[in-house]
Image 1 (cartoon, rainbow, N blue to C red):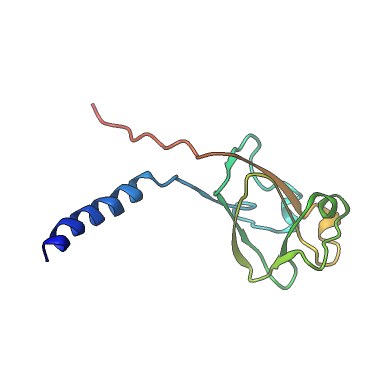
Image 2: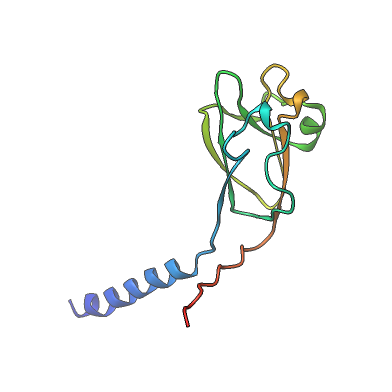
Length: 136
């Protein structure tokens, strides 16, 4: 019992510490209000956005017409996903970014050739924490 009295506060403090030091990540909606659709004409985000490893992309789309496939650079360049490529097709998919280049495309008929592909460079490290403003 005495051991439990000592260990429990230490365990709780450790859990609280881990919770406060986790890196902040963000989820970004691909294509804004239109979503992952050809109407965006290949413009998925405002220019100048910075993505970090661990951030996520949320793809919302009509699964009758579109899908999202994670591919490598050769597949991205040629619009030809391999059979081993991972396909998302729920119409509401959130995909975490890995450090470096991340390639996505739609491999349904004619999509990729009509600008339904995207390359995202995710910066290594943690996203800077947002500073809370204090009133004066």
